[in-house]
Each structure stands twice: as structure tokens, then as C-alpha cells.
Image (cartoon, rainbow, N blue to C red; front, side, top):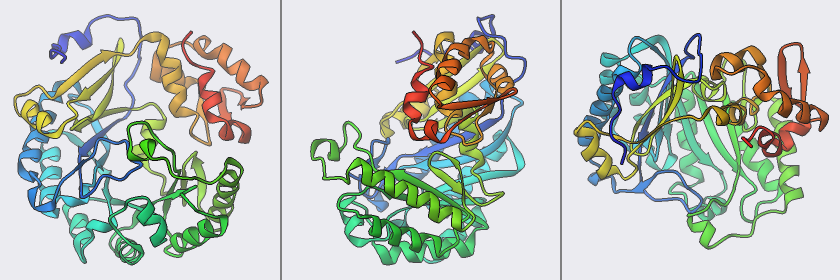
Length: 398
């Protein structure tokens, strides 16, 4: 457990010099799901809808936010992301109350992007419209696949028919929305992937997030690994995804994200550009900048422990300054995910470090053909995108 640090700690002199603070986003974690998926390593917990402690949890979120206000006083929130878990398990009335309570305490930009994650298995007719009326501006739907066999293998609570109905409703209720699709699934073929993608693209989604199924530690799949497509087959699937999305005007602007013009995810974009974010809710992470330091915080992970501590004004379990030596890697871990790359000036402004802090890594990356430099700008090459982990690792602290 971390003792709460006085606000003066964050303001005292340190090793960094940040001339200005980056944009600020708010992340809200709602941790419950109807069922834990076998591939999921997020902080999610099974709960029946009727047993959801919705009001007490929102009370805890508000208390958490109020305790954090001195750290972000006077700053404007440019995006809000309500993730999980399955946030759509919460009632539209609960989401309405949550957003009202947030607006009453934070300066929220007038056209703030407000995303809510939703799963087709929690979908009811008109429910998405009610979320829109509550103030949500963007829906992110965890479809993963439209194939009943794959959905069953992934442990999803919805089927193809529910996925189709949910996406149709989202397309009618929201001006912008995202579909999550996974590939390289157990038993999946290239033809099967194409069918999934054709179904998704038929709805003309403004944004698509496409993820390779990976086996994460401490998941059911880690203990009982399924047979997945070979590496070459997975690469062929990714190439086909890029071809099919480009053909309908969805540009790959980030490693896993494809969007029409004007529909890029602002919230995730702030992460990738090393912006700041305040995270509230069970297990939520924060990254906050001050004049002379950058701080990372983590809230208590277990929901009931989180609620008890948040309501007592001590939701933060970990609170640490980011080491100066770790900042180059932390920045590159995010910025190199973007197709457009980053400006060297942005690196200096967001980290408080000189360009010399990444000079050796950039030279090595350029020599290996992983990045190109143009004046004061750096961007990953196609090879850099394909070997992103290798590229990012060049900036690890010695």
C-alpha cells in the first residue's frame, strides 16, 4: 500500500523540465463482465447483472475523482473513455449520473469525445440510444468475430445474430463507432477471416480495431493453449486486413487501428502521443505530468477493496515518479505505434528530455531500416511496423 502523497510532493523541484503540460484524458474502469473470456488479462470480474453494485461503485468513482482533483486542477479534459470489463452492463441511468458527476467536477471540453465499451451479449433494443442520450458520443463494440464457432471458442457470451443486431443498432444511434475484431483465432483460415471482415465492413464502420489473438500469462488460454494459425498464416491475414480496409477508405493510422478521415480515436491518440490521463476505477492506471516530474499511479485492483478504499479517500495503491532513464522507452512504446510517427520537438516537450536521449536508438533503428527521419520528424517504416517490438526495444534503458 502507498501512503497518499501531499500535493506539494508533485510540485517540488526534480530532474525534468517540462515547459508545458500535454493534453489530459480521463479513463473510467468498470470492472465487471457476465463471464471472463479465456484470453482476457484485463482487470475484469464475473458478476450477474442483478448483483451489480452500480450505485456504490459510482459513489466510489466520484470519491476517487474528488481526491484526485488537486493533481489536475484547472486542466481541461479532452476525451473520456469508459472501459472494462463490460461497461454496458451498467444502466443508461447510471452512465448518465456518472457523466453528470464528472462534468460537475472537471472542466470538460465542449466537443469532448466520450467512448463507452459495449458487448453484444449485453445488448437490448434501444439501450444504445439511451447511452447516446446520456452523453456518450462514441461506442466501441467488442464483436471479435461474426462466426459462431469462433465466438464459442473465445468464450464470448454473444452469438452472430446478437453481434449483427448490436452493430446495426450502433450504426443507427451513433455518428461514430468502433468495432473490435480479432484474427489468428483457433481454427481460423484466411477465407474465414475474409468472411468476418466482409461482414464488419458491410456496416461501413467509421473505425475498426483489429487485434491478433495472443496468449497472455495468467489466463485460461495460458493454462490450456488452443491451436492457433502458424506465423506465416497470421501475417497473410494481416496483409489481407490491410488490403480490405484500404479498399473501403479505412486508413491504418496505428498498428491495430483503421479509420475513415475524421474518425480516429482521440482518446487512444492521446495515449500514443504520450499525453496525460487520469484513471479512476478498480485497477485503473494514471500518467500525470508536472513541471519537474512525470508520475504513474495505479488504483486498487479488486473491486470491493477499491470501493472501500476510494470511499475512504485512498483509492491509489501505487504512486511513483517515472525514472528519467525509462522515459525514452515509455515514449517510444507509444509513439512508434503511429503510422505518422512523431516530431522530435514533441518528444522533448512530452518527456522534458533533450533529443540526445534517443539519438543512439534512432541511429540504430535507421541503420536497420526500421525508421526514417525527415527533418525533425521520425516515423516507422513498413519493416518497423512489422517488427515493432524489436524497434521499441532499442530504446530500453541500459
